[in-house]
Image 1 (cartoon, rainbow, N blue to C red):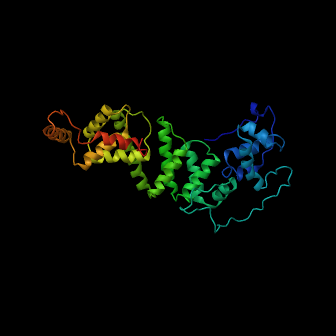
Image 2 (cartoon, rainbow, N blue to C red):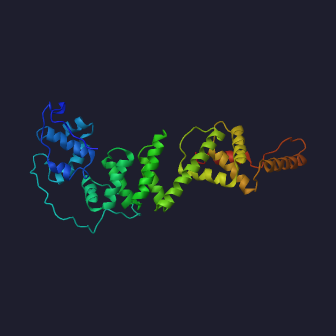
Image 3 (tube, helix red, strand yellow):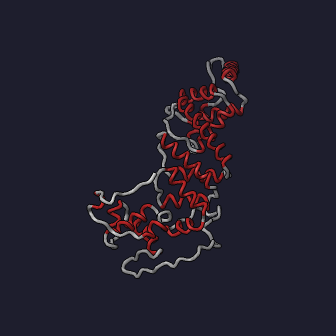
Length: 330
């Protein structure tokens, strides 16, 4: 489909201003949305504007505006505080020996300036492909912070572009389903996948299937235990997987019923401790729970005929004490 602006449309009624051709030919892909907007604002105001004026027009902070305009200063397009514009001499791009790739031993991913991002876009076709496809998947222009995050997923976490795009597709589908998650969820997911060694499409597909399965199990746990509806943490996902690997729904329900009878509020650690006790004692069915409980009470009665009932085999007093100090799983 072809698009055009009519030469006699109302858009021209308020006047025009010059926009350098190079802005489209060279920087349309390299520059971020707000870098382009800021430069357009400067061009619209006869080639001069303060960072405060630009910040007010774009709804950004002054420091953010000054940071993103550093890119245009370094490119020799504009000057700051009256300094002379230094034009950048175009030279054939050469691969640099030192990249921004950081060792996994580093505590956190490196910070990338707008100029760093542009350098990666120029020199790395894989990153150029990733950032372009990321905008298609998300259906919008991605910010500098998001560009920085995606580049670090490649260079710092060591993930392939196609794997990162699968994470973005999953994030978008979750948002469309009404899940309250932010873009930080994408970065956390990439970090987890990197730690798990997920580096190809097959592993990524298997991981997403595993997440879908754990979500179904989580929904069952919500219904059984009565906990408030929220997304499970990674520790909770692993805990639920262990439950259903060792027990069927009847046993999880029974453990939840015991939890409800002995706690004021729903508690996953309480249920978890009961199930661990059963696994330790080889109890795998409600009939075994009942039989062992009856046997325990019978022995207690024989030792003390006046005592009508003893403690259950899963020792609720000990479970109460242990779950009270368990902060790993909420």
